[in-house]
Image 1 (cartoon, rainbow, N blue to C red):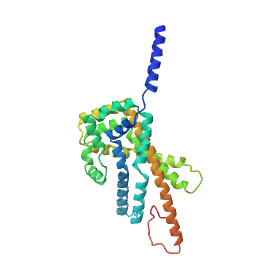
Image 2: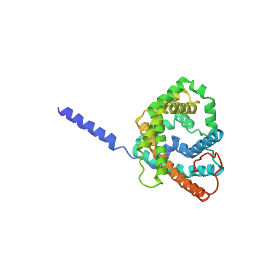
Image 3: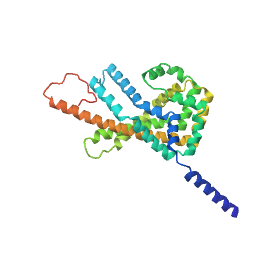
Image 4: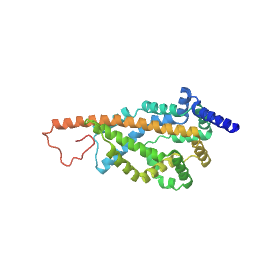
Length: 299
């Protein structure tokens, strides 16, 4: 009986030690982790990637003759993206969440992977600039990429481990709701998002197979030059406790940062819309050209 009690006490102290005595990550280790993992570089590239999305949407809309943007509107949107999606703000959210979740011991353990040759190869692949040329080449080689069953399975295993598809769906829902709140909220009063959120969530779940396929293609293309043994080692690394905590903190911090950026951009969009409406009201005596399509800043 005495032995049992002593064992229980020892286990309790071990658990308390694991939970409460891990040292807080230092500033130097935090900065090193963000650099070695490629997180800092990827966040720095985010505004340009959002701009690439705008460029592609603008080109497609112009080709389809749907919601074409004038040069002034395109320039205004581009400026909003640059002003709203600021890497420093996004990194602040990421770093805060990492401080809350990752210990100094976690960081030191992860440095072993990130400074290894395999870790460096993965980081270089993940730091690839995802510009128009990236997406064009990826789309043109999609059939070949998705035919690589081993690499596709690796990405699916990684998705299961990191829940990347879920993260993307949650991020899109958060962005849509933030945009809705900022635009509708400018009319004054409290904004009820329940029905809107429900509809967005349903739409995203319907689109889940396409989102999953798109993400699989994206990551298969990213890792196209990485050998199979390295990918398996990476998957094993992602399953370690410290890497899990770090991945979760990056996901949470990025979600918070992007939501804030989206809200900022939406508020500015609402102001532009009101300004545009005021200009149109001032010239309401003039006839509107026939068949003019509605654009984001028009009525």
